[in-house]
Amino acid sequence: MKRKYMLLMIAVLSLGSARMASAQSTNIKKVAQTGLQFLKVDMSARAAGMASSYSMIGQDANAVFYNPAGLAYMRSTYDVAISRTNWIADINYNAAALAGNFGNLGSFGISYIAADYGELVGTDIAPTTEGYVKTGSVDIGASAIGIAYARRLNDKFTVGGQVKWAQQHLGASTLTAGESTNNTVSGFAVDFGTVFYPGYIPSLRLGMNVRNFSQQFVYQEEEFDLPLNFRIGVAVDVMDFFGGSKTNSLMFSMDALHPRDYTERIHVGAEYWYMNMLALRVGYKTNYDTEGLSLGFGVHYKIAGMRLKFDYAYSAMDIFNGINRVTIGGAF
Image (cartoon, rainbow, N blue to C red; front, side, top):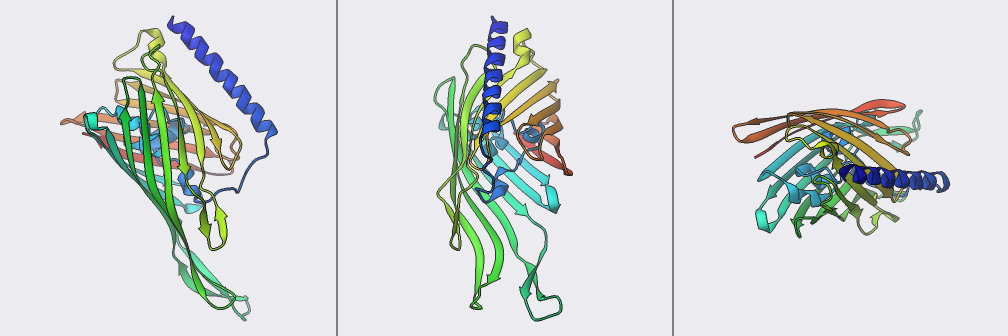
């Protein structure tokens, strides 16, 4: 019976992939439609190692960055994660998440993201040989902080959401009249999602989530949207089809994305756990100009009632240098 469900899942996913691929070939790419692009970057090394096919996998503090509904399945009382992403062009992202499981009250979480764009030197038009003068370092940066909540409605269905405040500042500029203005924008955004366990296979789960839902932001007189993203996902432990295992698992996950600023995409990933201590990960993203293959590993170790976690991921970026991510954390 389980093999029949496995064949059915493969057929459904294959059909969905074909439809998405067809849509990609006919739709116009909707590039340059959104701002605050740092909200799209993977902040978890574990998720990045699986090519961000994490919306149905995350059941720890990192779920706040993907699908907050996953917080309701936390097995520990508290979970914390701190991540570092070395992005292209010497841009770095730092992120942190803390979550707590309070039983019948539900699970709560907080998240923080900070973008480090490095040092930029400002210039101004001047009657010099170069045609400009340097005005010193430009203060630029971006960040987001959020509060999340998730709750099980029954033994099969979970909902969750996050409210976050996002801001970006790009220094000051001088207008034609000689006046100076600060290029700063900020506002609220909402994430929400669901996770559903049908029950046919113990580990099978599916659901949806929406990230970065908000009103338009405004830079001076220019309005723009945040990178709104709708995705549906499915995940299952392949070991369930062969009797299951208490110490080893092979998770397969797939997310289908509908972003505001691009055509449809598919993320596919796999994660193998050996003795619940060592994890190997691989994933692939379709319909990206630069991103594609991702690899990663993780080491989790129990000591004195705590579960210490270290995760690493490498993402190939075509014409750019590869992206390295590291996440350290613990469950208590």
